[in-house]
Every structure is written in structure tokens, then in C-alpha cells.
Length: 82
Image (spheres, rainbow, N blue to C red):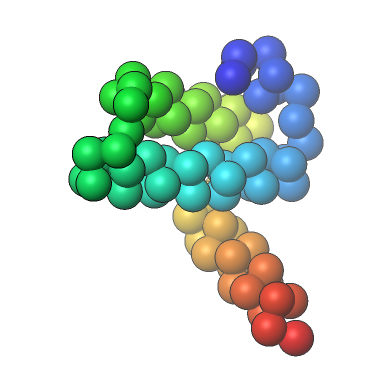
């Protein structure tokens, strides 16, 4: 993911992208633990992508990013259950 692509995203899309990247990072870590990860460089790339998204969010003045992420996750879980 290039920084230009991240800059084009709206704030709501950035939150969704951050959530997707974190889930992907979790999956990669699980694969690394079970020794099924073929390319360990994927972990580094995922970490850098997360950092890019967080940097753009902070540049735009976004406050309480983690708090908003937890809220969005709770809303998504509630929609799946309902």
C-alpha cells in the first residue's frame, strides 16, 4: 500500500482499512506461530501499512483513534448479532 493511496481515503475508510490491516496482522502472527507463514516479510509490510494509516489519521487531527476503533468494532458485532 502506497502513502498516496492512503491519503486519498476518507476518514471512515481509514478506520475500516485500519481494522482490516489489524485483522490481517493477527492472522499473519497466528501463521507465524504455527510455522505456516511462507514469507516473514509480510509481517513487516503489514506493520508498516498500519503505521501509514495511523500517520495519515494523526495528520488529519484525528483524536482518540483507539477509542473510535473499539466503538466501530462494537457496532459491527452488534449488527452481526441483530
